Image (cartoon, rainbow over all chains, first blue to last red; front, side, top):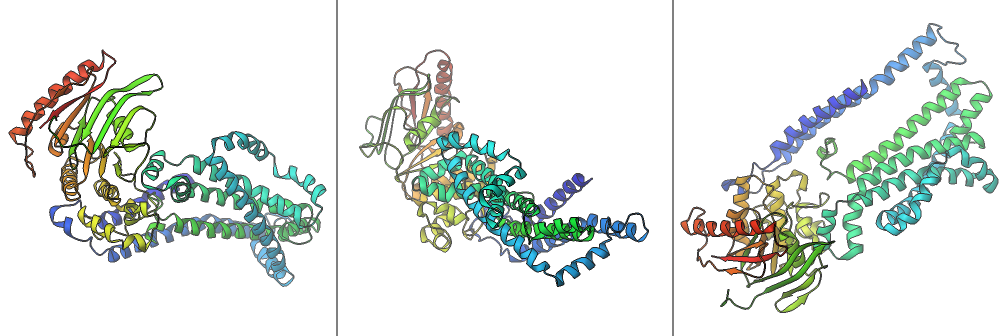
Length: 311
Length: 265
């Protein structure tokens, strides 16, 4: 169901943009148009932006349909007494709980978790950028490092926790390291495969017209790998949130993971659900920011998803 | 070929192999300044390999490439290369692609006088800030031609540059190439599998084949530009090239030698 909807919309989008694009083409290069500058394209761009804008709105509305229905069902279930309210809080109760929590230090929990994710993710992603670039650029580095990284990647996140607690105590350090580990591997994979898969033909152009190896890395390999790097960053960020919860579930006095534990220990399902909802919103927010940056940086891409192209 | 001026480009390839397979043997080719030379041959005869050797993209061969009497090893600013596909960098604007060699993008490229002039010459004035994804195939190849000329090379190499565009666009691009080549007085070596294209564009058509030794077959046909594609002179030359190609292809299967036949017109 979801899949067919997605395809449907990709096609719809394509038609809209294809239409707009066809109009902005200079039709061939006929004898008359050859000497002409291209038609002022602003008006056409505006049309395209309008079309893409309405398409985006209908997409957003469709995306909201399932959450809306789910909330309505949950509310109905609670009101009609289909579920025990202490185990299955109604959306209304959860909203009340969030309001109540907001008065009692919710901001502090959110901030603690967000800072941990930000610090851990940044550190892990930076290391992964370096390691990924090294492995993507050098066959020898790949032969040396890739097998070990693959083995480390296979370790489940929770397996690190006892070791990190033993080594680093129960302060911030083990949490940040765990989050860093979570962010590292997706980013590393994105960077290394991005560098490795750059079109050899473009590299050849850089050989002819560029200025050597470093210049080629900076001006061709890096931009060509950006799509893959952004995929890695987005996956890394979502894993960073996941690992953050794992870290906070075990030993924390603040943060959303602590709130989850606290809710369970005090039998407050509404607090647990509230924390889950906040985690979902924060995760989506972070991903949305990255997605926006990605769309801006990669606006040169010629893909079906052309919303960004029309701004 | 006996009384031609001293060559700008003098290429000798004694031996070029991929692993054990011999691709080129005893090929000799020289090109006069501002000459336009077409290189044709049966597929698999090594014409693209020869072009890559001249460009400096392939340095693993026995032989020598002389530019103005000086041996070349590897890449040089004096030689520009235009590939079969436009190969534009999709993240750079048209101007930044043309001025890639500068190493600086943005307004520096967009307002660079040579970029502006070259884009006007290839019929893309006003496209300075366009991204490659908005260009048609023919337009993209025009940008590639401008990029090839930006460094003001002495020799421009083209590897089947118009084989991926529709016939009408191909004709226009051929005229454009002649136009800019003459205007910039650049020496051109063009690999193509289209005999008519080679004849229309070139001062000399060389047939790379499988005949042992170096056999030169001069066909002297003086034909002014602009040329009429249907002129009887071209038709005669066409027959000579076809005959030579036929012999070259026939022998491609049997003896191991490859060499260069020349049909001058």
